[in-house]
Image (cartoon, rainbow, N blue to C red; front, side):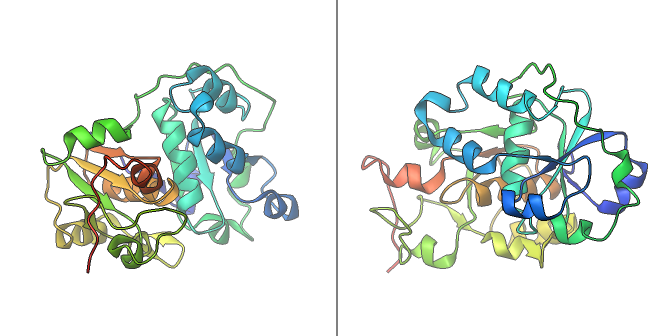
Length: 266
C-alpha cells in the first residue's frame, strides 16, 4: 500500500524524532540552516547514480553514503531543498529505495525559513550510524533501460515529467536525439506544483486522470536526468497509486541507445 511521502511543517510538531537532511547547495546550507540539519552531498550523489561503478547496484557504496548522514534505518528521515522539490525528491527516492522511511518537507526551505518551534525535534548529528541497506524495499521501485524496453507495450503507463518542448523533441538538452518514449503520457513536473509546494492528493489524482492514467495502473516515471522523475513518482504515490517505479537515469540514458525507440512530434 502507498503512503504519502510528503509531510507538512506543522506535522513535524507531533512527529516522532527524525533525522533532518538539507538537499540545497552548500553555499545555501552554510548561509543558514536548522541546527540539526545534515547536508546531503547532492552533486556527488547525482554523479554516483549515473556512474557504472557507483550505480544503485553497488549496495556497499550507497550503504556507506547513507550511513555517513547519521541514518540508522530506524528513525524516519525528513529532507528539504530550496523549494524546487526536485532535489529533495531525488534524495527521497534514493533513501526509500534502500529501505529508509523517508519524507519530503512540502515547500522546502521557504516553508522552514524563520520557523524554529519544531527544529528541536530533529535528532542531533553524532556522526555516521550503522545502516543496513535493503535495495528495492521502498514503496517506489527502480527500472533500468533494458527492463523498460522489454516492458513497453505491455501493462505499464509511462509518466513523462519533462517539458512539452522536450517531449516534442524540440529541446534536446544535451541529447543527440529528442522526442518521447512510445506511448508516454506527458505531465510536466511544474504542473504538479503550486509555487514550491506539491499539490494535494485529490488535485494530483485529477491531473493524472486527465493525462490518461487510471486507478491500478503500473506507472513508470522519467524525466531527463532523475530529479523530475523522482518528483513524479512522489506525486503518483501521493495521488494513491501503489505500483510505481522510476526510470531514474531517464531519457538521457534512453536516447543514447539507438536500439531504443523514440517518437518525435511534428
